[in-house]
Length: 371
Image (cartoon, rainbow, N blue to C red; front, side, top):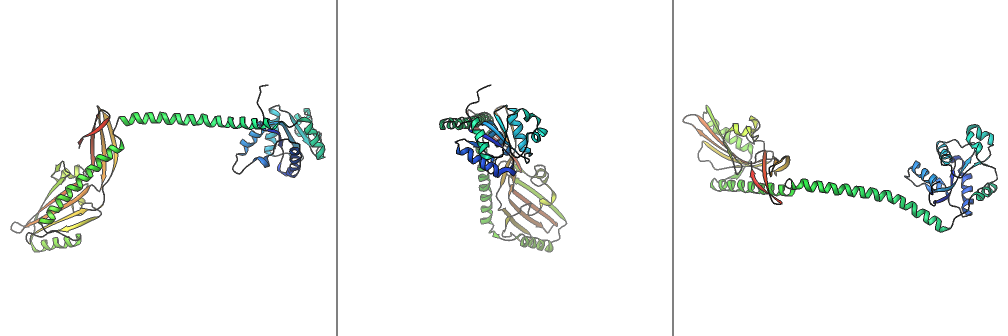
């Protein structure tokens, strides 16, 4: 038989909970003889896996004993008894207040096992002590050390596996990262873009604010002013002109605005143009047939990466914006002589989606184009 090494316990006791008082007495007397006993009541801690702890105890003992009484018929008693027999260890059945005939009627294979048939506890202890003697303390220290190392080996093996997987993942991510700009590089470009847009809106608005003597108003007041103009003048035709600018590109038709998603439906072609929170400003009228006002978006721009394409040393990053319109300026002029309304809508902001084109030069990515 292969050498299994020292055991952490001398004796493993198999029993049922109904016999716990009897087992307590046996346990105490065996420990008085210097024997180390695996007794579930002493070994289990809250949260332990029952099966794992029992099998651990079954493996780490020099002698197995089963306290067999008329109560010995639980599931775990059956498991422990079969495991002790299966491993062909030194195993002593103790028949307490039960005959051999009663036991072998249900467990005939025990007929071939030497058993202690006794009701006197001291006699039982004496018979057990004849079968096994305590080992020196160094034996148990060595056993516990080896047991700990065996557990640690599994932990160390798993730790190395995990570290290896992390290393491979890091290599993969590093390689993949070299194929595209980092998130930091992308964020820096977008934040710079946002700063340029803020400056564009601010410069345009401040210029109009100073020249036209603008003041803060409400959209309701502006609409009332507009209705007053219509009441004073008979208008039979309407002309609307749209102009969108994002700092790089002009779009000058409603059709172009719709195709680019800037105005997704007709209702958004009117104030407040889909803005949720804004400051409305009204400007001094040139005459009684004109009206000029602006809506400044006060909600921050939000963005997310929605697509990537890599090839030929280039990386295209699709950025989707929310709250992309930053300013809407409406210039309304009525022509009483020919009963015509001319309305010019100027929109400043981002397209709902932009594509950042990066080019790799050496180890770094540089912005080549925004479209």
